[in-house]
Image 1 (tube, each protein chain N blue to C red):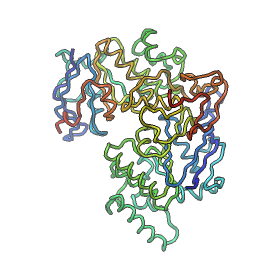
Image 2: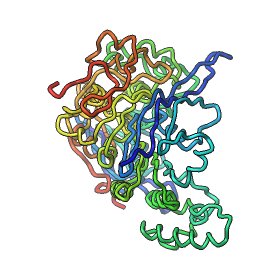
Image 3: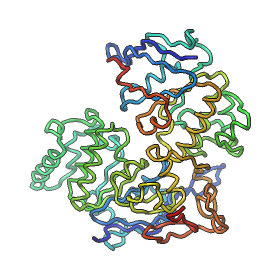
Image 4: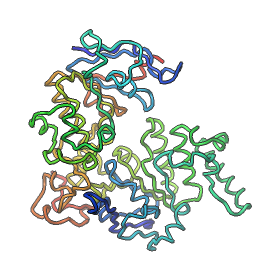
Length: 316
Length: 203
């Protein structure tokens, strides 16, 4: 196992006008640190509209120009600057976007899957490969000549996955691959992702659906208001959740209808109102004095990475 | 009291019905779960029952009386995306008082904070907005709540909070709930009965 991608202290913010010409900084991701190995799926779990997709865009270097980014992203130990990002994206790092809307509506499926090729000689090889991969996903030759609007949701998902595979990527970033699909298509998509992992690909799976995360991933990183609060082994999402150390993670798990449907008071504030200190302290049952003033650093406790001054133990 | 939808048929395009001869009955003291695949027409049924779509065939009655198609509809729909149901140029107190002014006690039950009243919809999170849209729907004239995937976009903690307070309030005030979702596990926890959409839609 080697570290394919390391992200360290990545922050993304936008400046926003709020009163006349007054501006304020809107932080969407703060101090994000995580890494992905080969043969591994890391799920990034956060609530909807929390800007998780921006993480994918930051790795690929396709953030809008008014975004402010700090921190570092390393690919196999090498710092990724804009040049390297451009070189890697679409080759070693592939992206499976959220929806069919990411396909060009005026282009046939095959044409946009293979993209622009300079050399005529290469073209044949690539077309052959595209056919091979499409066959693996049961996409018949008819699909090649279709326009995106003719595809069903499940088929479009397969087209997006197989397009991402065309250049033998080492890392795949999948952004919400399951919503909008019926149960069977979800299962199939999940199987496809796990298969890719077994072939050695390292994957970042961005999702808001805790069930998808549990079923596919090896580790789960939980985001709260743009902060990573815990990175834990997926196996810990089991039983009574006694191995989950952060209070928020444990309530998330115990609130699942399949487990206890347990009620926890408090609610997640909006991004304009991120509290000082630990972002979760207002709702936390285990808050201590420090939580109000100081942001806890990420640290390791029993193999779990956690951002908390007073984590839960197994007996709690 | 019962809300009865009898033999409802509806089509967006000629000769392509999406709902056919659907009958469903919602008692005022129960939560009925309606489960089905995406794109099967669950939301269309919700809109028909709560008066958003009018050119359907069949009847919708409450206590054997036809629902009046004008005025306040006693069956109120709560949508999946609260942000799309609010005027972005209205502050939250105006959004809420368009329907009614709930007593402070009720605001507390649903976790609405006083400080939110002077904010714009864009300044609240999805979970916070959904609390407003639920409370807005609980106007005293409301007899039934049609909840169309109201917690799909929310994290599990918020999901529990919202259903807990909604069901508690409705049971106390004899308001029936039709809970629509594709999440089987959720419906098994919250609903008294589960109806499969494909069983009642006689396409």
